[in-house]
Length: 460
Ligand code: UD1
Ligand code: CA
Image (cartoon, rainbow, N blue to C red):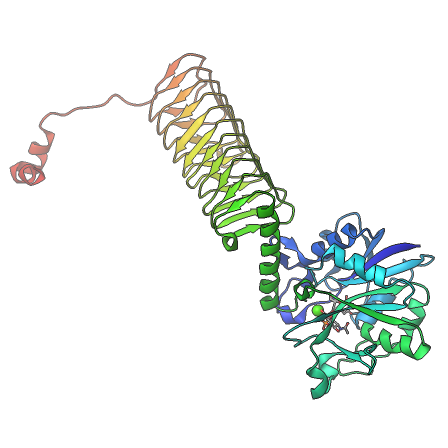
């Protein structure tokens, strides 16, 4: 006997008014369907099947290898969505939890509770009490309080629409007999769809047992059908994630203004200032202060670092770093410890050794920068000649004067000095001075001769 999960993700999501399939719309940079998969797996489901259809290639490209894909050729309703998995589930025994790819906030504990409630019950429905049931299927109950049916809003009478107990679209079924029951469901309704919700009636007709449990936190079952609901779900997830990190020792001065994706890891005593966006597989080590106004994607930040008003993409930053304001680390940067990347400095594909400083207004790309290097303001690695990219190598302890152009490929030796405003096109040997600029010209009395006396007086 096993617990299996099936996630319905074949629909188009018409109400999103989007070219993107609904389940690929994102909360905190992660597609909706990924949240549902994570919850199913965290609840201990041994197999997770995802049913795809509309734009299936795009949806399937985002699915992890740990799920099995089932194709629904036509989007003719949720009963058919489960029925198409019959072949994939042939021979399987136990329970099947059915989840919706557009209900991303469901917690694993709720799935577990539903599976437990399904012991010895053919169909168990997860319901919720909500203030505004608009758009959801309503739960019908008989005089004893037992479920007697589910009616979709479009098919409901005015009286039924007043019911505030809704179908969350999440169910647990005994696999035994499930597919025979699904085949009995017709499409005689307003939308002419095969409704999975009609399985309740099929069970009752067969005198098979139907049960339900009601989720205590209705926000878990928020379905995302529109952009308004997407924003609402984002707020709930944002708050849930932020509260968990605060409980784990992270300070947020304004949690409503921090957005942390689910796969981010923060060590205790990290501090997040307003307008911080952390996404992908980002990790922030203890003692770091991130923000304000900072975006970090798929990167690691070492302990006791400062990242102020900056962007860090797919890079590794060592401990005691000082980045920003407005540092821009593009993918492929590796910074050793105690590095300073200052005001309006852009880095790409560059390794910076321990204790090196690039404090102001520079572009350093495709470079190997040694330890203890200082790169003066407004210096540039000219890494692109219009056809190919070339590397710049700067040895340990080198001093690069301000406004230096390093025309790659070029190597600046360790402990050498490059004079300010030089265009360096040839390698600089270790310990040497390289200067490339014309001698300064002084023309005495030039202003008086060229502009006359009045201009000179005005200038005074
Ligand atoms: C469904 C329920 C409704 C419930 C609500 C909860 C039905 C008939 N209604 O309505 O009672 O209150 O969820 O959120 O089930 N899908 C497919 N293939 C299809 C049709 C849909 O994979 O042929 C998928 C969709 O991608 C979506 C899920 O099934 O992930 C639910 O479909 P949707 O059209 O959003 O149903 P609702 O109208 O929200
Ligand atoms: Ca829905």
